[in-house]
Image (cartoon, rainbow, N blue to C red):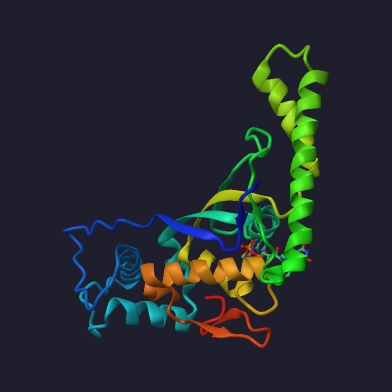
Length: 251
Ligand SMILES: Cc1cc2nc3c(=O)[nH]c(=O)nc-3n(C[C@H](O)[C@H](O)[C@H](O)COP(=O)(O)OP(=O)(O)OC[C@H]3O[C@@H](n4cnc5c(N)ncnc54)[C@H](O)[C@@H]3O)c2cc1C
């Protein structure tokens, strides 16, 4: 019986570690994290305003950058996340976000998918009949995959390199695996790029699974570095699902 995911698992892997240079001290104000300070430092360097004439707190400084649309300084702070419990159809949409993003995803050519998990599409969660019919399809697809790998391993028995033979079998057999197959992906992006992706994918027009993941990512990043993400507001949309809206569009 495969494992079924009803929600994504989002884990923070990395965030900036800022080392303030002793010869260019900034007069910091207010609470902040390293990623936010790095951004303020970069912004202040442009005008050599390390003495902070307006006595602005770091988060107010970043708020002003977002308001003015000077988003390039947000590119210094990068955040790496591990996404699990997401489907191949979600990651197919996610990797369309190019500028400022880096990806490393589980390979279905190398990894044995005979134990793969599946992600329940949000729209069918809670309806027993729909979920039952969907699960039966997933189990049948997985059984077909297992049988195909076995037959292909036998068909290409003459390939001496076993690793290569397995790859040949798995890359062909994965053709029967559905879009709902669970995958894992490491995603790194700078704060500006995350903002653009989150604006598009947490909105009401986005597909439900990526929208749910975008809300989970947003909450994690808001807790990690509020200065960059506090202007997103999560609300319950007309379709009774969460969505988010942004105050400063595309900085
Ligand atoms: C609700 C929704 C539905 C969608 N439906 C479809 C669909 O049916 N079919 C489909 O194919 N895609 C679809 N997409 C994907 C969409 O077309 C984009 O590929 C995706 O949203 C990434 O956006 P982007 O290119 O702005 O992002 P990024 O690649 O992250 O780029 C961010 C910004 O950088 C700039 N930029 C990046 N690359 C370039 C470049 N090469 N030249 C100039 N400027 C650049 C642009 O200003 C761009 O907005 C959909 C997206 C959403 C949110």
